[in-house]
Amino acid sequence: MDGIMTSKLFATRQGTILVGVIAAVVAAIALIVYLNNYRNSVNNNAVTSVLVAKSLIQKGTSGAVVGSTEMYTISHVAKSSLQKDALVDPSALAGQVAVTDIYPGQQLTAADFGPATGSLDEQLSPTQRAVVVPLGSPQQVGGQIGAGSHVDVWVSTTGSNGRPVVSDSFQDMYVLGASGDNVTLRATAQQAGQLIYASQNAQMWLVLRPTVATTTKQRPVTGIKAGG
Image (cartoon, rainbow, N blue to C red; front, side, top):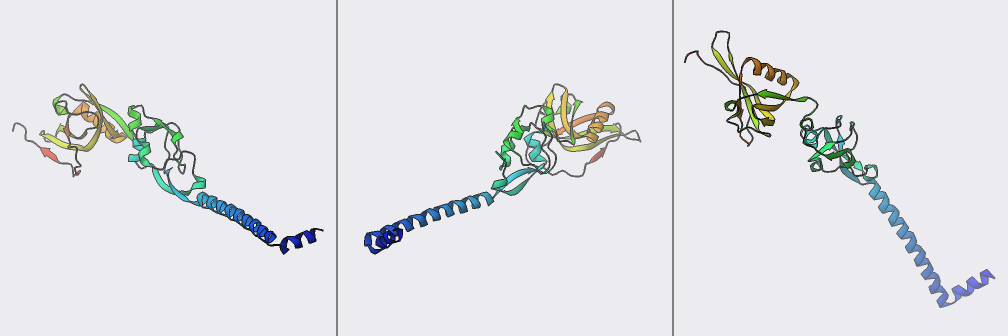
C-alpha cells in the first residue's frame, strides 16, 4: 500500500514539487546546523590576548607596581580557555590592587583586583622599601618636594684628609610623600640602610629633578677645600 501511494505521489506534478520542497527544507536545516557548529568551533578556537602573571603577584600589590615592574606578560589563548572577566588591557590595572595572591601562569581577572586605598605598601614592589629621612626646608628645595617628585640625593661628609666632600649618592629616587621635616623615599633595602646612615652621620640634600625625562649619569663627587 505504501509503495502504491509513493508511486502515485511521484506520478503527479504536485507530488514531485512537494517532495522537492521537503528535500530543500531538509537540506536547509542541515546547512544551518552545520554552519552553527562550524561557527561555534571557530569561536571556541579563536585566539585572543590576555594578561598572565609572569611572577608571583602578592596580595596588596598595586596595579601600578604590577605594570611598572612587568609582573605580567601578554599571552594569546583560545577563547575557550579564557577565564571569566579576564583582563585583556593593561590600562585596567590603573587604580587597582591585588586582593589575592596571583601565581605565575595564572590569568589576571577582574575578581583578582579591587580599588586601591592609596597606602604606601601598595606603591612598593617586593624588592622596594619606604624609608623616611629628616630634612630641613633648604634640604627639601624650600619645601618644593612632594609625593611624586623625582630627586637626586647629595651627601656632604668630611674626607680622610679633613676636607669636606659632597657626592651625588643616589639619582632619580622617587618621593612617596613629604610632611614637615620628613621625606619618604622609595628605595631598595640596601639604599634604605645607606640613607639612614647618611642621615645620622652626614648632611643630606635633595635636588629636584625636572618632570621631563633626564638621563642618569655617573655620580659626580666634588671636593671642597676647607676654608675656601
